Every structure is written in C-alpha cells, then in structure tokens.
Image (tube, rainbow, N blue to C red):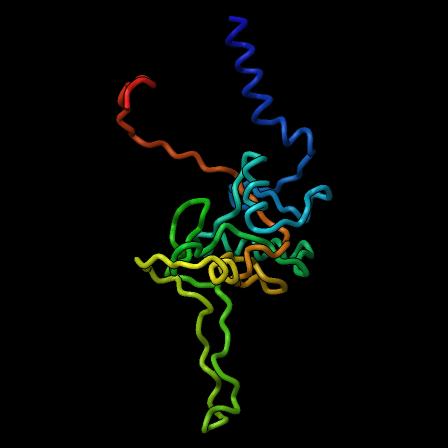
Length: 203
C-alpha cells in the first residue's frame, strides 16, 4: 500500500511539479489549454527547437492549428490581449520535406484553409501592363509531397512556421530565430497495439 501511495505521489509531482515551480499561467480557448510564453514573465524567447523542448518540459507541446476555428480563436485572443507586436512559434515546419506538417500532431496543413502569408512574385514595374497586380503566391506549399529535401541551411532558413505580427498570418522563418511561442495541452491517443513479450536477451 505504501509503495502504491509513493508511486502516486511521484506521478503527481512529475505531472504538476514544473507548473508549480514555475507558476505558469495558461488560458483555455474552446476547450484547449494554451501556454503563451509572452504571458509568463519568466519564460524566455527561444529558437524553434528550444521552444519545442520548453513546451515538452511543461508536459505540453508546441501548438498546432489544424482547423480554421482553432486558428481564428488564437489569433483573435492574441490580438485582443495586445500581443500583436510579437511573433510566436507554432509546431508547423517543413523540415526534411517540401510539405508543411504540424510537428506536434504529425498532420499535414489543412488544404481547405491556408493562412500562409502571400507574397508578390515580381514588382509591378516588370509587367508590360502596370494595371495588372503582381501574382499572389503562397510562400510555401501545403500540398502533399513525397520527395525528401536535402541540405541543412536551406531547410533552416524557411523551415519553421511562426504566427507573424501584427496580423498573425503563418510565415516560414529561420528556425534559429528567437521568438515567443505557444504551447498547448498534450493530446492523449489510444492505439490498439499488439504487444509481443520479449526479454532483453532476445535480439
């Protein structure tokens, strides 16, 4: 009985320890719990990878925005809270592939809506008819790709997706840039795994 009680206390400490020690503040939007680094005075601005690690140390993960409702909800909150002077890392990236994925969920960007910043291809002066506006094209594809990319610097340069102030559109940024970040409550998934009992001596 004492062993069971001690185990429960250790699990409780492991679950709530970091939050209690750092006294973090979270918000709840549409049933999702968020940690916004800008709200917490002791949270540093970090590069993409350290932001991901920081979220995991709190038992959370970098936020993913798989639905339009979820994306609109966080954008509205950040704007109304006065955080539209700051950029925030999300879990979105295209590291190692041409396809943008939410790293925390493994899901591709939803093709039914796209908040990726749109940029002009050419200045108007290069067009024969100046009345024609430059073409708007997404700065990064959300269409599925099966080709892995090689080379580290190109991947790092535009590999990680941030909510870019002041409008909080999605924009690929250099993964090494220092920014605020948004974590969200870790999802629990249950899979029907077929476990095979083995011993460490088996190869």
